[in-house]
Image 1 (cartoon, rainbow, N blue to C red):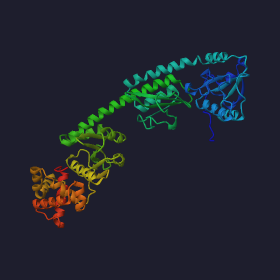
Image 2 (cartoon, rainbow, N blue to C red; image 1 turned 60 degrees about the vertical axis):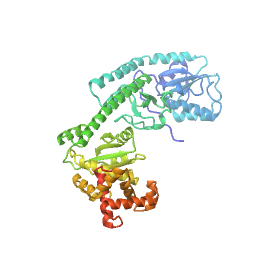
Image 3 (cartoon, helix red, strand yellow; image 1 turned 45 degrees about the horizontal axis):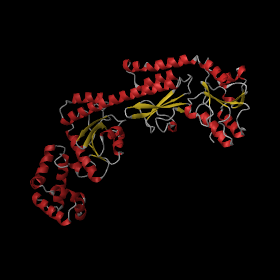
Image 4 (spheres, rainbow, N blue to C red; image 1 turned 90 degrees about the horizontal axis):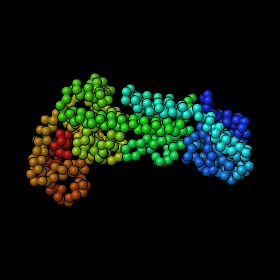
Length: 503
């Protein structure tokens, strides 16, 4: 079994320890085991005859029992003591000559291993006498706890008047409360930026309704609309005595308010980002105005910085919130256009990986470009790339990965002329007769001219597809069996996608 070390505790002036309690002559206590833990602090004394009182404990209690709660078997006695220590109990006190069964060596070994004091009081000393002495000793501590609560309440004023960052706010709360503070979602992920997650996620409760006590402190739900957003974990162990459960509960409320503020700020920034990206796509902003907005929204804004380039992404098969969560660590602008999500982000591996790792997505990215550049060319590139991702089944395709498409010019007028010259008659014929000649030819080409495979993809008979290909060749005037004719049609199809003539 791994060695379990009792937490180091500093005894501040005026605080009651187990050792001081034992030294009260009127209580006539003696130490049966766990003497090395006599420096543990005592917050309360409570009678319990339950075999597992830990769900109702807050830590630092002296548990008093007549022995009814203590099991008879050696292994169960050991487990009983370990449960008390895990809950942060200060000491276990037994009433002599009452109902305790014979105590086994395993029981005493566990007390020594965990440095958990096991005390005995004579039968003639009532438990109420111990409780009164503890209450009198810790009464002076109540003023400190109330003061800490009032100062935690004052954090509402700090947030309103001082515009504190999250990290600074929680450092202040740690100094006030005497706890090390952690925040996380129910699954152990970060809940607020700059606040660490618990070092041991196993301390997280299974539900928000679980008792708050955990070894060394508390785990409290952080309320939010619709249920708990996660947990605040408060652990003792510093030079300041922890201020107790009430203060930890107030800090959880402050965390909930800070989380609500952060979400409101994020939604406002998300709306501003969508408006900015819409105007950039419409090409109605001056480059200087674009750079000012990008800088305010946390994106690269220096056109001369080769490391600060941007990419335009188009992502399909994902909802807005899912993509926003995936890019949480990457500044970005996001805009919904029908079934596509347009995303402007820095040209970083983290942003690309975050999108590519989403399940079932198809995403295409433009080439990197400087901040303030018109989005007309990047948009065409991203449209082409996402179409390539969709047809190939790849989650993420950067523009230029296709050996044919990369040779197309960027000038839309040149691309438009190529489409009209090669495919104009087919486009008009499909529109007038509601046929699918262009789609049929494209599907056949994408499947390496395998007639049966293409027919299955189109849900038609191979003879029907063969007729369509002959009709397509007649309208375009290109012999699809020749290398020159095939190459010209293939490039024209790529150009049509790049300028958005076909989906």
